[in-house]
Length: 231
Image (cartoon, rainbow, N blue to C red; front, side, top):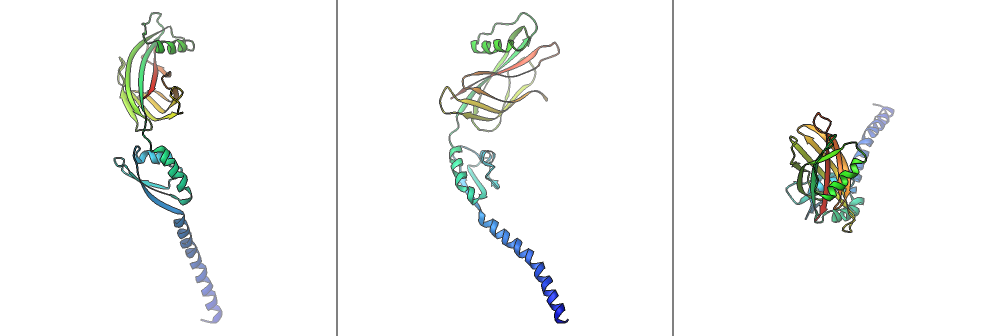
């Protein structure tokens, strides 16, 4: 091989090797920017960490039945991540939720509802809807942990297979009596049929009409009313 051919071959080899060297260097640079740390949790689960702080997490591992979570993140985000984790990992409040199912009818005769707060919110609803009377179908109760796992409840009702799911419950505010309870997901099913699906908020100790759905084939409607108290 002459000198000119040797030079050309060396140039080709150099061009082939340079991208590989560049990629290797990039991998080293990226690895220097990452950090993996393990934390022991007191009041929350790895699922809570991943769901609430996923904007900072590149990878996460942890058994839901364990109080240990391991995360990978960029070093530049470590300080803010740990500050937010400290605020997140606090004892969760319990929220007592009462669920009322009410049948709205076009019949003039209804039934007396003794609960004054429930009757008041139905009086407000009657200004919007054209139903003539309301009767209480059933009242159910469940305790929910703020920010906990999804909650399921089979409602006490004369209607068949009423199942309620409540998830992603958060409390906004710090002053008792002025706090707001966010329900990130509220679903009411009758068997496999979805009757109500919504996101909503209500004041603590307040009553709220969460949704209205068809009930049967005679023109009646099912009204779902919730009341929440922070313990």
